[in-house]
Image (tube, rainbow, N blue to C red; front, side, top):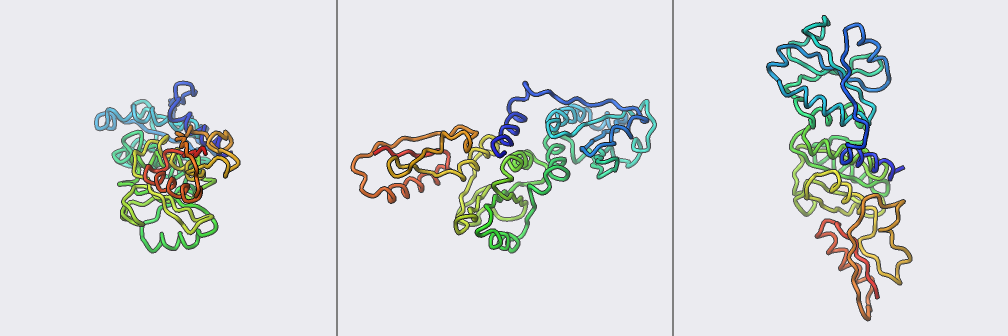
Length: 296
């Protein structure tokens, strides 16, 4: 299940040319009720002349958002208010996006705030599709309680972002969708980055089997980079042939993203576990970007 979810995310983000791209449905006023009569999420933009003047590039961002969210079952519609008469063409006064589910209006968003693809996708994913996969935490006391409650139960990913709805937020949501079965994801805009030993945008607390050991990630927030780091948290950082029976880095049931491997050829290895510990320290410094295989 985990591997299939990861593959879905990578296809959505990196191989869109081979995925059927969703299109925006042009709606007449009398077609809206049928369009929103579904348990899936529906988004409608009521386009006015005022909106076209104020936000001339918005329709391009809206169209790209429809492509990005199509694989999640979200469908986007547009009503031309120059030819259609509907109350949402004038209410509210600011041009807005309207989100529906099961025929009911869930929320409206002024497009002056959701004016690009990243903000649209992030808000739709977080507020309607993945709200249980990514939880907001803003105080150190709340975080401490989460870590105490998680010991022996689950691993935690904590991410700092500048603002909700930005590109980093969107990318984190995509990764949380893939790894939500293995980690509990939390998001903060207020907690300091330099907590727990180092300054980093993302911290992984391994609480399920260890005493909430923390690993830091401060590299780029591309989905593939984030997914590679989080995948590495579930794998040993060093394998010693002869001491360990298997090399999990090539197990397709565990690994969906190729792992860089470093082979260490060592003679007369007298303290395998001590050597393993040293390699694990090195792996931590390179943000777990590689797996070490020791050949005796």
